[in-house]
Length: 144
Image 1 (spheres, rainbow, N blue to C red):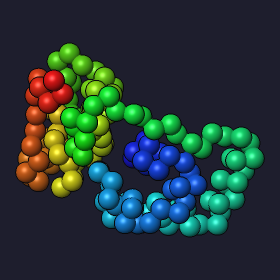
Image 2 (image 1 turned 90 degrees about the vertical axis):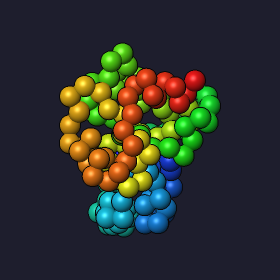
Image 3 (image 1 turned 90 degrees about the horizontal axis):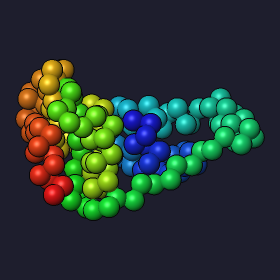
Image 4 (image 1 turned 180 degrees about the vertical axis):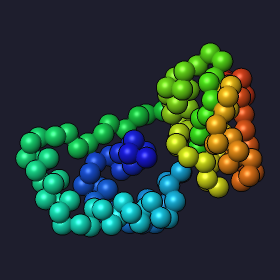
């Protein structure tokens, strides 16, 4: 979630002024989590902590990844299980490189669950929500 927020908003300052609706619109983020993020940033104690981090020159900006193609633009993937040839990190990078996004949890907003060997509860949740499940070969076909 942190990586998704950082890559979408680009900086802590942009996230500070983000609305619940703007955060909720992100794939893999629900209304409750969006409200919790907004509430956290509204707390004056957290503003004080952020000021201390700025004073310590902590980098609070994230460079946005520029996709090499848009074949997966607008699609959100969740990974579960061990893939045959790609590591989870490699699969995530492949998805992002083609304009897709990766979430850690399955929701109605999930486009596909990428399933490998020994999938966990994410596959069960995808089935219960009617989210399509694909394998590594299917992912590779999507980006070719």
